[in-house]
Image 1 (tube, rainbow, N blue to C red):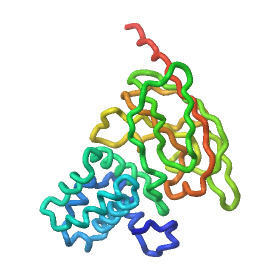
Image 2: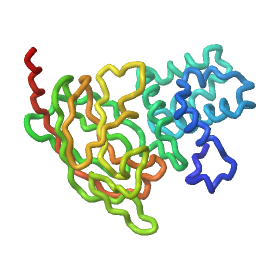
Image 3: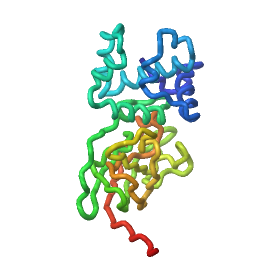
Image 4: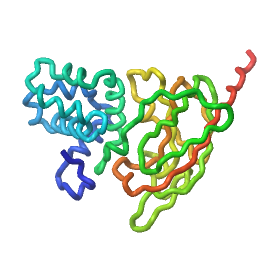
Length: 259
């Protein structure tokens, strides 16, 4: 029922590190496999870590907390996973994807409320620039813009926001703070991802972001909804403050070269 803020708060408490290492090694488990553990799995470190991760994710998440807690009335159900699917309803595919994003971003101090994803499908952008405000203290944010496959998306960003407050306030702009990196990209840099209308069974687009910075143009591979966020640890969003302004427009894709 807790995610320690730092590793120092819980010495020898290795669940977060175990999940991080397994994910990095390509050994992440889908929720179905975690739910299939039997009553003896808790005696194995890895299975215990997966069980804790699933329980923490579902219990702290604002959208899945209620159906998860309702499972206490179904612990003896013959089809426990089926009961949970029934309680979740048509959100199961979204839940499976959000579980992926959770595993990819799990840190000490992870806050499910700040990292919760809005899966509302986007609408076609207006002609010209479409303006979006991005909160520096939240994870992936839905721009409500649907980008067509094959088009060129141009994003320009500006603003000044806080990405840390100790030992003093760290101010940042969309280009990021290059004296510190997180997951291989500058802290605070603007990230983008296009979540396909019909996500594939493989990795979510939200765990393979593009670094946009102050501005970038990219080709949209699959039609989908544009998501933006500031690059920071999911365990360190509570000391962020402020927002940035992003401007998005679609450009015509270049003509194919003559054969």
